[in-house]
Length: 183
Image 1 (cartoon, one colour):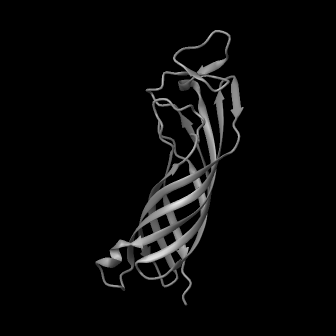
Image 2 (cartoon, helix red, strand yellow):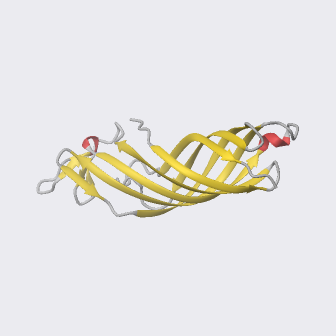
Image 3 (cartoon, one colour):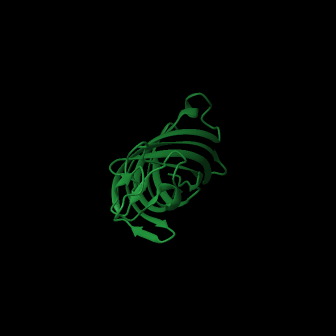
């Protein structure tokens, strides 16, 4: 299933030219997760996965587990306004492509009807990118609709053992509202 989470953040940056700007960001958010239909596995309470329940061990099928993950992220990104290469400098629109590097902290809790387990906080290097379409509403106020992804290094943020699915991504989309200081 697809589950929507929530994220809040602040950012600040410097615009060198219409083409290039940099920004630092701090975000925090959370999301619930469930297993994919193709995961028929059984997870023991000691973190090992099996194809069927094991005698003498406690655990749950993946389909019965729910995970709640919270994250915090500190990052930097470069913004390249590719629209500025083909339009006049006075246009109010922008199309940004933004590579990003970040430090991400995740914490996950697994839950089932008679089971709850909090995992230790994990730290990941996040490598990702964003794409955004923006509009300069006034001289000082701007807005952007953005979408992006962050690939997390290290162990999976949901604390499910790697088997068939090895991806470790956080996808995001949202609205940024910015205040522009003039020189």
